[in-house]
Length: 233
Image (cartoon, rainbow, N blue to C red; front, side):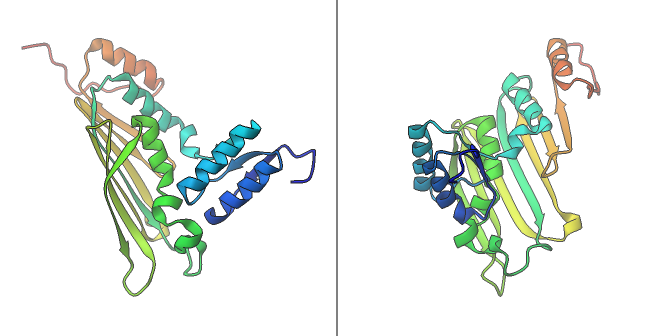
């Protein structure tokens, strides 16, 4: 932090340290890239943002899913309205705990903030990018029997006053069964996205010729399969 030849600091440490380390870096006049979450408390995040603004410094959170090609394609399809208005979304993450020993900081809510803050922040950020601000309707957490580990969480959400959604995050699978799925339901179709780091996108929908041409353009080399054609009443 005292070196003049260092302009940017990358913070990739356990979440509880993000706020104090980012604050020190900003006070030293450095641009900051910090792993998610930016902090464990909203007030801490607000303070970092304000401090960066005062000093005209870059403060960025590494929300890596914002740069995934398939998720950006999904965002284009949502924004296009080609499948009608979105009605419902869900994200379900069945994560492994084989490589999370009992003494790992992940299980310590004081260090990690818990699953919603340490892990689900990826997907809250993604769905806010797609649908705007999210309202939490309900939330629940489960503690693993015989331990103090909160290993499963669930919440119900609403966006734009009418788009309903759910998130489930569980850390109780074996490494080989680690998997994650998104589904978005529209008025005239749905999108499915598979993989924590997405590797597959599926689309089903009813579109007219003009809308099909626009989807073809968006999908590039992927292409569309016509299952049935409707010639009118």
